[in-house]
Length: 215
Image (cartoon, rainbow, N blue to C red):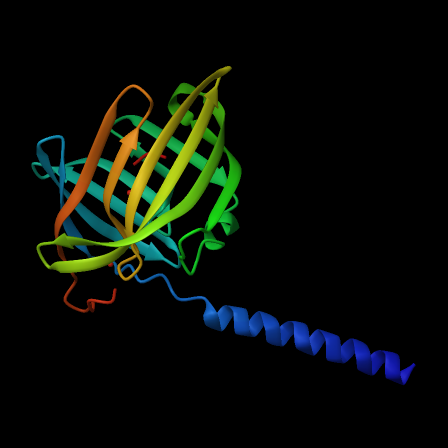
C-alpha cells in the first residue's frame, strides 16, 4: 500500500513539474498599455491606441480625425472577442486555447476552432468556424525600423440565419510586439487592407514590448 501511495505521489509530482515547466516556457504577451500607432487604410489615416492589457487580452481603440470610431478587445492581437463600430456591437465566444497552440509561432503550425457570435442590438446569434495557419516568416519595415513577422492566414466562416459568409485575413504579425503590422482581407467579392506606418511606445515601455477588425 505504501509503495502504491509513493508511486502516486511521484506521478503527481512529475505532472506538477511538467505543468510548471510549460508555464515557464509560455512567453508573456508583450503588448504594452499606452502604445499608439498610425494606420493607413483606404486612403485615410487612423490612430490606434492600446487602452487596456490584461494577460493575453488587450483593448484597442481606433480614432479618425480625433473621433473614436471603433473598439476591439482581442486575444493575443489575433482574434476579437468583442467590440463595436459605431452602434454595431458584437461578442465572439470560443476556446482561446486553440490560439495558444500556435505559440511559439513557427511556419507550418495550424489550428481551428468553433465559436458563436452575437449582435446584442439586433438580437442576432450565429456560429463561427475559424482556421489559422502560419504560412511564412519574413520582415516588414515601418518608420521605426524593420520587424520580423509571421504571415498568419485567418479564415472565418460566419453563419447567421442559415446564410454563410467566408472572410479571409492575412496578418503580418510581429511577435516582438504582439501585434499585426499589416492585414490583407477578402470576403470573396471585395478586398481591403490596412498597415501600420509608425508606432509610439509608452515612455515606460521597451522596444521588445507592442493587435486588430471585427473578426
